[in-house]
Length: 205
Image (cartoon, rainbow, N blue to C red; front, side, top):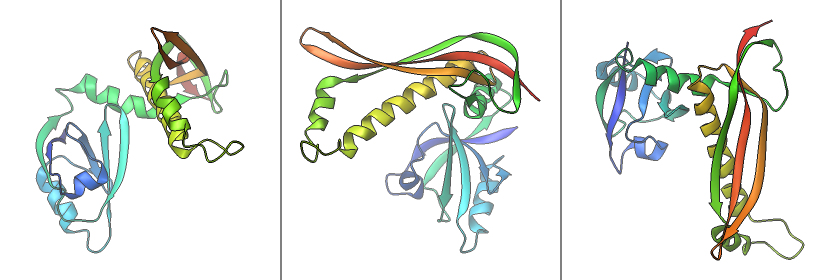
């Protein structure tokens, strides 16, 4: 199978606005496999006044955006999914993995327990304390900036956990736990997040 890989992104194009980056692999446009540049061009030009739904993959992250222009503002190169089979399968498997904090997943049974998987991420406390100065008042809640930083830390750690499990060819991760701690030393401190769980293969009930 063929797909399209982004080689460059114009600073003023539609792709830049949509958050598409270099090395992203373009998968489908309105459900049609992007096997060539001609397919992409034809799909964009035939959209009429409707936006097109573009699906791409970035290191296992599935991106779904709406394109409202006839041109993305990118240069593309062919991506052979067979020659890059291991990478392609890994990218898609990371997105499709099922995660839960519970010991089981509704509608499935564990057919094989593979291994414990972990991921670690760090956020510098100095940056975090600076963000906390944006607290609205003494009894108010924390700022959106600090909440977004912690959310991004969590999402990055969970994504790394997905990659660890996907490399084991897992279908899901059960018993997911997130543990935060503070590490200090040398006048510096950090928030340390560890995500862990058990990678498993699943069968439908």
